[in-house]
Length: 177
Image (cartoon, rainbow, N blue to C red; front, side, top):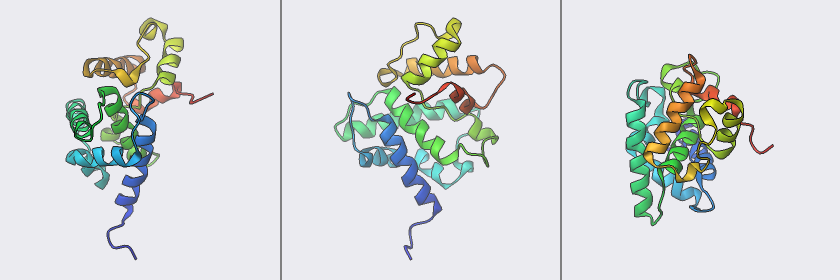
């Protein structure tokens, strides 16, 4: 029996793998081990693997997310990588999605405010479905500054209206059709 391997570590490894694969780009290519290390270097983010009670509250989520992005960027710089807020956000968002956004936790208030992974496919479809909000919006998520990213999440909320479960925006994400 492996003594230090529990369901939290199992979930963490899968989520870190998924997040690193999803957020590595042509202009910022890094290994899964790098992404996993960056997640683990941001202690409050890494602690989230222990359960939903370790997620920030709905009220503090955006501010905590910004500090996590800064932590990811700093850890990446120490590894010799230039990571943007867009890439850091996708690393965080896919990680949290893989750990928490599933049928047993989907309506938890802390899970509802987890930011969705943002990419060109999602933005393209949002621009088609909601041109009044998204037409002409920048598609280069991997180049987003902090302000660009925060504006995007604000538009996600505006698009959803009264729907408070941010993961619901992914009804517009169709993958690689």
